[in-house]
Image (cartoon, rainbow, N blue to C red; front, side):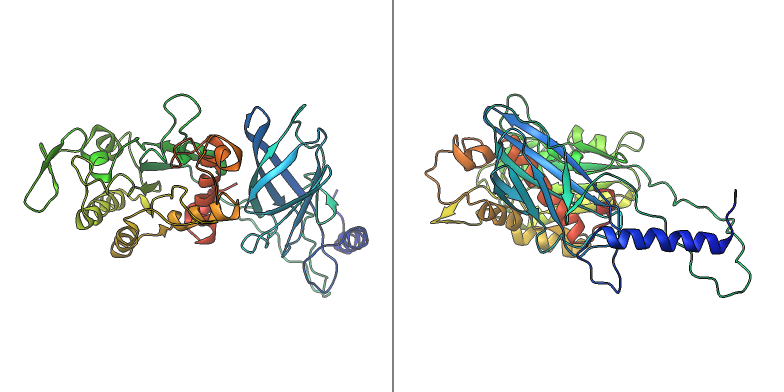
Length: 406
């Protein structure tokens, strides 16, 4: 049955009035706003006495300029550290508030954060969440009402498509070293690339081709980089042919395709003074350019990352400790591609988590939950947080891949 327009307008006015009287929101407007929300709470890792969790808020109502998420732990769990939100706890009640860069949520917009926690008898997922005081039920946002009639004839219904085009599927290819690589066995080390896929929707496939112990040159040319330096101080490559991993990524049928993304992070092993891992400054920039050019030729969109930091403390402050930072940003500028300063973001995260000072024992406490017992490589919880830094940077820097984030 088709309702007359005046009846539809009256129904919408009644519905909006009901909503306006039922809830309060934090967005400034002439009148009250419709609200609705969904919360996805995922336990990303769990160990004896501790766990990591990722939380995503989806705003199903009117836009808001700030959010406060609340829930209650049923088994007495405790939040020990958090990132991308300010989290406080009183008894079993937990409150998470947005930070400066993720407070604004448009309709259907999302914000994600994560935390580590402790548990004793159990670790059940909370059953109820509230955002800005409203219980989240996952109900879709109300359909927008038509504007009031001006007395003229109603416009003809549109014959065009009523739904947006499907989002194309893409592959995100990762190239880097052990801090990015998939774990080879056991619980440590875990590279952040292995924890990257859950930040994206189902239209993204992550192909992690990072390999432990590699500089950019050995990654590209294994096993042909020799232990001999030439007259310029660079390692001799003989024969001058690419590794099978890079060759397979360049393959027209099975490798990178137009619309895909290539994320590159080296600079940790490249500073070795001895071959085969040694790479000089100019050579490093040249090889980044080689990878970028090959990707662009195939319609692939490259993103360069500065190397993730280890944990180095100067008193109570985590400080930078990697090289090839300027080289990475210079190569990005020269080749016209985005760069994410993961080095700065990572030691900034360590400071926000209070990982300094520490006694150098990376098997215990907060720093032990984040790092392997070598101050460089990550436990699963640490790798998940580093992956979250990269995901957040995609959104903050308006890199198109951010359109695929959950």
